Length: 290
Image (cartoon, rainbow, N blue to C red; front, side, top):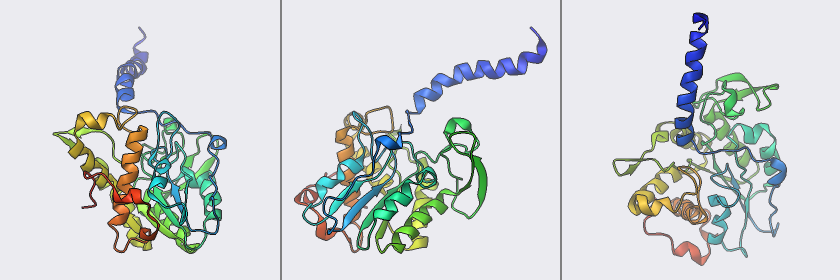
């Protein structure tokens, strides 16, 4: 063998052995075609609207399901609209750069409420083409970088995760609506009987800090859900996930939606309290805001 090819051969060989293990750890996070995830319309435009903004953990195609598709059951449709504008495969960066945020924002009116949750698709290296142009800069400062979009042809200026989350909050407040930032839902990763939450020091913290910086409300959905899963135990938790560690079954989506409601009820005061349905009085005992 030509020894000059050994380094390349080693890289290829390593990739062959590493690829299966990487696939075993990471669930599919496909970028949903925006034309197949049309924006939802409020049923009664004279009422306030609760808007969900996020990724596939909030809205997924069958047989998976996101919590944003289940949260409407906890609200009285005679008092408030609930629309799920989340879309699979988006990050805090691409939800804005693709123009979906501008379209959603154009529908938001004074008195509305916007639940905003990102993080799962912001992970990875923004310079890695396999990341499909999704990662934001990992941090919360004002730094920027030039990066390719998913087409690998068009360059864009990208910002930190914290910057994007602050923008969502500021834009929402400018419309006279109430922004509520949620930390990302946890993965089903067990360690010593607990759900491992490495994102608490990164995306969770950056989300909370963005809410504080913009005077937005904040719910640590990551902790509420993780603590609930720990109380349920691994066997029961398996039925709440439709893949290895990330996306929910309909049952899991309803559980996560209930966790968001628990978080809302933990706010002082909770601005959505007048709009709950009777279902919000019957939340799982495993879910607590503290």
